[in-house]
Amino acid sequence: MTEESFDGIKVNGRSYRKPTARTVVICFDGCDPRYISHGLSAGLLPNISKIMSEGFFAIADAAMPTFTNPNNMSIVTGAPPKVHGISGNYYLDKATGREVMITDASLVSSGTVLAALADAGMRVAAITAKDKLRKMLGSGLKGICFSSERAREATLKENGIDEVERLVGRPTPDMYSPDLSLFVLDAGIRLLETRRADVLYLSLSDMVQHSAGPGEELADSFNREVDKRVGRMLELDAVVAIVADHGMTDKCTPDGQPQVVYLERALNDQFGPSSVRVICPITDPFVRHHGALGSFVRVYRKKGAPLATQLHAVRALPGVDAVLTREEACARWELPHDREADLVVTGDRNTVIGASAAEHDLSALAGHRLRSHGGAFEQRVPFLLSHPLTAEYRATSESRALRNFDIFDFALNGVQ
Ligand SMILES: [Zn+2]
Image 1 (cartoon, rainbow, N blue to C red):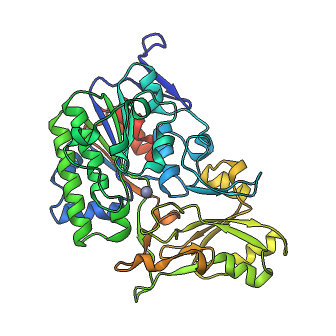
Image 2: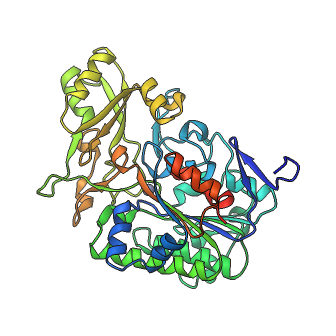
Image 3: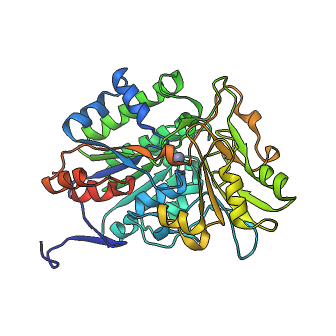
């Protein structure tokens, strides 16, 4: 293909063709591969099963940290966090010393595939479950962009669409119900049925996966409902691509108690009060899922012992997986250097890391085991395409590990 004949866009060094078939990319939030394997063996996922036999299925690696915002941004930019600048939900602004929840696009430092496709004349829709993600995903996007959490409030001016409840045929869902995600899929289906969008990015919520593992009724019935909607998109002749932002692991002791390292407390006990501040970048307004406990935290050294001494102290704690300096973390996980802490600490498979007990309300978890994500044990995610790959992309998939943020490349350039 010559440069002149290329009908597409370039974003962050990658080229994307403008699709001729309508294309839906689903971010199946928190869909650990174990939900797929269980769903297939239990017969819950007939449509995903069909995709696997007729299209393409692989396991890909999510970006680190394995949190929702960094990975959604990686998926829509086709790039790791060092390119788009979002490496958590919550961060410490080193310039001001303030701790900030990221809810707008001010920290997004690159363009998105969605915005570029819209600029190239495609009709693009981005629908999210949680409103906290909407402005980031919609960064620069001239198209439809709304959340199911705030569907009722969508306006043409702000969201490129109004009367969403009428479109979907039911009221805005409760923010803690599985319908928060199903509403996203149903809205996408209605946009396909009414021919209002060519490219759709549908990003779900991981509330169900935080609450229930494979085989538990809540998860099984939710996954069955998602699969039904995938089937409807296939009926509508869309190319459907499914990927996840991160996996999900049980973070409990064998007797069901949350397995937590309170790292700020441990270091301040050892090195003196206010020696460090620990930031948990999983923190978000949806505290009921996980009590702000994940398997990845950032340690800011304030005073006391030298960094190397603190690093060795962290490494000695049971339940800790990796302890990296800023330079090491940025090199290994392609993180933005200017937003990284002095130390980055991850929990092992069944351990989450918090600041101090007072900062994490575990009473909210009543009724289910702590399940969470953030570390390297939640990097494996499913990567599915409804159509077979071209020979070139099949070769690519065999020659290197896929990333979840390869999904737009594969969906737009790689299917037959
Ligand atoms: Zn997530």
